[in-house]
Image (cartoon, rainbow, N blue to C red; front, side):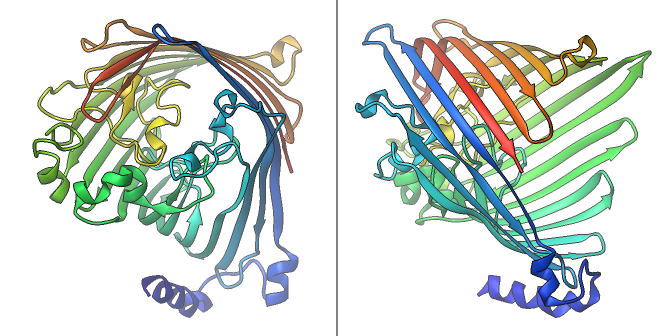
Amino acid sequence: MKYKKLSLLILSTALLANSEVTTLSEVFSEAKISGNVKYYYIQTDKDNANTADTSAKANSIGGQLRFDTASLYGVSAGVTFMTTNPFLLNDDPAKVDTSIIGKNNAARGADPTEGFSVLGEAYLAYNYADFDFILGRKAIKTPFVHSKYVRMIPSTVEGLFGSYALNKKSNIEVAYLSRFKQRTSDRFIDMIEHALGDDTKAITGSDGGYVIMLGINYTQNKISGKAYDYYAKDFMNSLYLDTSYTTKLSDTKISFAGQYINQKGIGNADTNLAQTGSVTGGKKINVNAFGLKISTSLSDAKFVLAYSKVLKDDEKHDSMILPWDGTPLFANSTTSNDLFQSIHGSALKADSIYIGGSQGVKISYNQKYDSLGLKGFTTMLLYLNTSNSRFAKDQHDYNAVLGYKYDEHFSLTLKGIWVKNNTGADATGAITQLKQLSQYRVIADYKF
């Protein structure tokens, strides 16, 4: 009912807005079609200290097809069809890497090796002056709710979205988020039920819920920052703050940044998780983290040094909770929270830098080669050390990426990821470590 009321409000005020077109027929004749076709190969090898080693691979082809109407009196609409279609898979499902197929679908009883198609975006939009409103399904990028487009298709959410532009680089955002579709799934699931799975009612006292998001993005001269708050009734409240200062010394661009994150259980979750025998072992949610980052850019090179710390509290559930594909820490790497916390029902699990008590130091180096005559070629090297008094050994992440962009349409990316002592924590905080994880990816993408 509330969605219908908003739709009527949008339509009733539409006559006040400016139009790209003036007739209904032009809404469709001036519409834009865009999208991409993507090929993805992935191979993940795991060296287990006490059990047999494993290797899983997958090929898939898919992408997105997007249709956006022109604006009539400020009203427009859009839909995005998304698909992933695996091929040449191993007959043994255990040897298939489903992280580019239907890994999240498996958590709800479906075959994760089966491809799928989904209407990932479908929305009605209204623009008036500096105000924008959207009703429906949309891919968004915020610290805790994110599209995380690093596999075949992005994660998307369903709800109501509004924004007000303060200037060209600053805005205020507000959203009511009701359902979430994870990037390896074709199903839109209640936001809270997706996070907590079968434990939803035991923790929150109900079968589901919503998330209300308020965000501010600000840029003025050399200073920028953002502040986001996410309220999930009877589950938790998440606060994200960061700020940065950018300047130039001769030909070198230097940026300094800091961040703070807090998550706290609220309402029924705060009461129920404190009970002996709860899924967290009687621990309430209380997470505090901060980070620092310095980056420098000179000509075609960029260097980043980042530090992140998730504070330790043995009496609380102190690991970061990331069910909606956000990975907000400065020291995040490619393998940090690699799908695991955003899988259905896995919000109270954590890995690597996001585990309570972890501190990470990340160094990365990005290089373009246009000035050397190798137009379109880029490389990225990254190292992350994650230490924690709860770990038997430090975790070491190494990432190497070779990219080639032929033009605005076609790109090819080769990625290598190597992790020693890949670490995870369950809902109680119990730690497990994998001796070695190696992953290789080939991604060819054509945009139109």
